Length: 351
Image 1 (cartoon, helix red, strand yellow):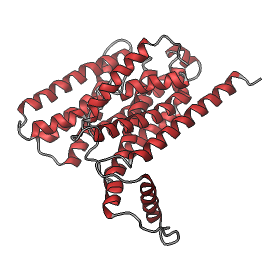
Image 2: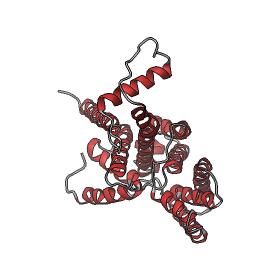
Image 3: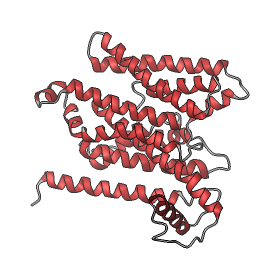
């Protein structure tokens, strides 16, 4: 008879494989969706042809060009960067949400619990008001997000009492100040040009993503995500409580700080490129917990896979449902809020 631990490993592996398959299927199907139709077979041929060209095998493995230049532009220049960015942002937000829920032992924790998203919104609004180009708007949002969390850390260190509680309270306070600053910038912005741009950024969108943006987005996300994956077993011990984790040899202050910094980095990178996208970091970890359990060794990778697939699916709906593209932040709220309510009201025990 198989041991419970072995059965748990097999179950985690099965769920992760199925989630990976769903993500892969959604990834390839997304290329065929859009105003300009591209058959699935041609999508695969275009992608492989581009891959062979990048690694220098196009001369060795030649492929007959059976697609039009418009198809290649639609697949490579328009849909590929947007699809990859949706996966990166969804993966990062879901991983950050699962990490914060474990670190703070709070099921309502989300990537914005320390004010990172609010800080990014203020930075982006300020850059738009100053007439900065798109690249500088992204950089301003990223830097403002990190500075906001640094300020929250400083406040929590100076305040008396429990540091974890101080972090949450500091995040609420500083995030509220950033929201007030963003509101003021919207008030003084030019209503014919700057205000619509700020409002659209705050609603979240991946429509302006270009191929050259992907390395700049992927690097800080990877720097944050890799340590989260490596430390996910210690996140299990942190979830037991401060004294229990310390008695098991975990350097709780150091590990918690590293986890918070890495989760903040991934959140800042995601929000700076996509705008304000809510609910992904709150709903997806809960869904993953239903599917795979509370063990972060499986929960964190599952959250990353489901987060990427969920945001990719929402982005597909965003750009295909109506003639005018719907901001993705609106759809994540419309889908995420009722689904989260469903998860709360379900009486079944967590798997």
